[in-house]
Image (cartoon, rainbow, N blue to C red; front, side, top):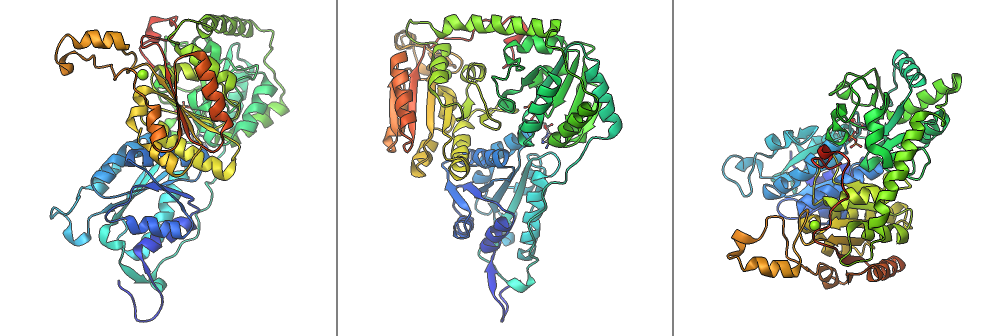
Length: 574
Ligand code: ADP
Ligand code: MG
């Protein structure tokens, strides 16, 4: 190919940008450099929003969050070799979460392959492990078709990540427009429905259950099934439990939410309706001791291969969650059934809920300093708006925050997810703030980070300030990973010798002023040690709707979560 004598010529960079635009891609995150700078420039020129990040990993996390939040993949644009490698974490994270994502990586020029070219790496081979689809266009002419296929693959069936490898010499190469195979926007994912026999089986199992439980997963959030799931909960009077990112599909304050009695609900349910959640570590594999040996699982998923994983389902409903939930609603309107709220099961769940809420009250209202996790989250719960988008990561910070900070709306909680990834928070917050700015500007993004988690991508504060995103970052700072040392203990410890031989692996520098990084870029920084200072900082940052801010909350470095009822619970995150 080359520019013909007559007809208009188009460059590879332009073709990529036009094709993404034709597939309704709105956002691109990346870091420019050889050979992909022109792609970012062309994308921006055509109206795709380009957000330049400080590390490809964060760029990739951000692009993947756009996919989850909007149902349309975000694009991550990276340079060859190291840029591509840094993005692998984001691809894996998106794929593990079943979120759509498109990654475009520049690679070395075709005529230098295997010669030791600048930043050469076997990107296509490496991409295979991390993606649903890995593809390298063989000519400029097929770029629109390759991009259409990647976008379609990322959102059809179980969503996931797709990688497109672009030879460096393609970017500025020109081709005659008349020879390009242009593509229309791919059609929305076709909707699949559960077969009638499986549906009838499910309805019968539910209607005969004695201790039913509905588990709502982030697949339900992704499929926008909130209205129908809420109807199902109300119509059938089912107790429900959201997984971490499914919080808010049905509001946490709905009377049927049994999140505060999670262990009891899982342990004793006889029939479980699993709506878009995998029986992986997050749900203890669906096995004893966390579940009954004889529990009957009604599994609902869009991915056929998922059905039967770890537990043999009593009914398998293959299909889109929103549609299958509608089917269930229709069945139950033909054959009305409501689980009695006077049942022993409800009594037991309600007692447990009250009990557990009592237990944390004491910790929440503790007056002594330094503060503990529960006090910090208590004040956040009091002062943060109900409809904010919560991003959260860290070990204790995320776990305790999940139980204490309610969600009232779907897809407004983003966290470490299926892969348990730390370092996702700032990228997610940037993506959520970009999406909110365009769609729901009244919603604030609040990013609750452990001090260790914050460190993975802390330089993205510059990105937040550059794009003037009114994100509030709260660093719950315990001077370490899991636990840390206070300044006195730190000084004592250093007497024992060489830092590398005596600083505990869990420790981070005590009293780090992370808020000063925010003020360095023009945002507002708050260093707080008392509940009053925390309240004031929260109020000030919520009142200021324009400026990014960071509240660095010093807590007891030895603060821990409240005692778990079962010793085996402390081993996992839940
Ligand atoms: P959680 O972490 O909340 O437990 P998982 O990520 O484990 O959730 O599970 C989500 C499940 O939802 C995946 O198995 C995925 O195939 C499924 N899923 C995604 N989108 C849909 C959809 N539209 N309809 C049905 N299932 C879906
Ligand atoms: Mg910490």
